[in-house]
Image (tube, rainbow, N blue to C red; front, side, top):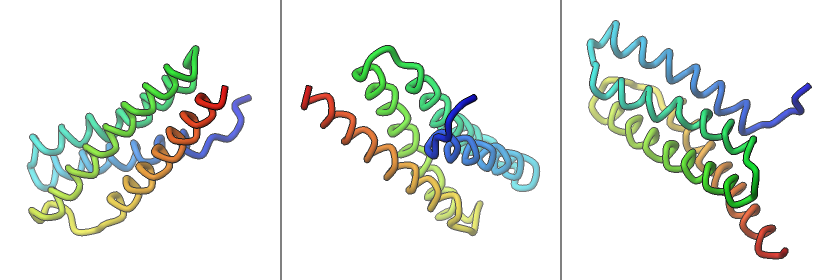
Length: 118
């Protein structure tokens, strides 16, 4: 049985919300370009975290989490853009993406520090 992993769980829930946002943007707002971008980057965060969790080394783990971090930054960009252009009104997903950014940054920093101590 898998033990609890907050960043894995948060990124999975976030991906579900991104998929629902994509459905909303394409069906209600008829927006296809930005919605595809955010779908790709928003679901990629968790996919790369999953890959990181099966890494064979700490360096590989850091590399995969850095990809997740980049995808989280890109997702935050698309969310800010969608809000600024009136496609979405609420900040909930943006807050969640910023939280993922902070968590990923913290994990990467602490893993690098632990790696340097060895």
